Image (cartoon, rainbow, N blue to C red; front, side):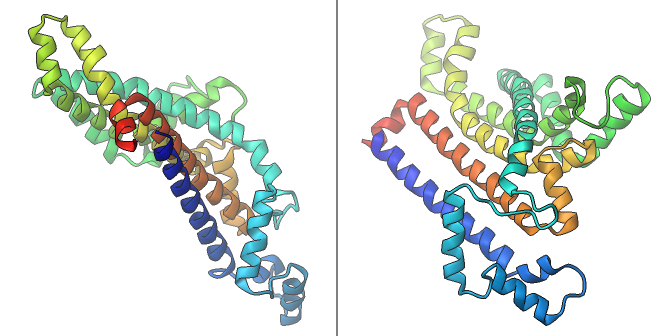
Length: 307
């Protein structure tokens, strides 16, 4: 097991380095940093002065090495607009986004797991068909459109919930529901397919022949094995929700990482955009690694395979 985890950790580090290199190239090659810093109508002398001041005239590998050194030290740069350290800007907002994403993934799992189990237990029946239809509709519905429908229904028409801001828990209800729709279809389908495969396995037929209760077979035997891929997908979906929060936070005016990224893109604040992209990407990598660790702990076959 240790060998497998070390191998996965090495792969995660390589992917993280690749992501940092891609972020650096996009922000330093695709866009001229000096031009972004200079503002409107800069002269060539202004641009040259900025390049010398921020060491943008040095070779790209040397600048990338300095960039990595700053990242290791926790220095994500300084906002071009406010002059505030980007690390501080992210730290002030990460709690809001993480809370929203965590609530959304828990809501998605709370709906997807029972729905997937019910669909698999009634395979081919009306329950299975209804759940599959609802999942298809949710998957086809764009996230921003679902958010707008929720605002119109529960915020404008019924006036049950606030539609903007993050002052109270009530402000997070509609954004949580809207964000959970990103992960709900995939989690439901994966739970259903895993349960169908588990229910067709030999050990389930043996358990039925031994007279074990149907509920115990369904939840204690089949669901435990069906949960392994759902764990991996849930971790990836949580990272995806951090990126999807850009749309949701912008619509509901929630001042988290997503709202900060949207404002930075409008104002072309490259250091902030670069830091947000890097943070979300690294979150994906860490969560994927942790899901591998959890799956290895839950599935003895992975331990034997790594031996």
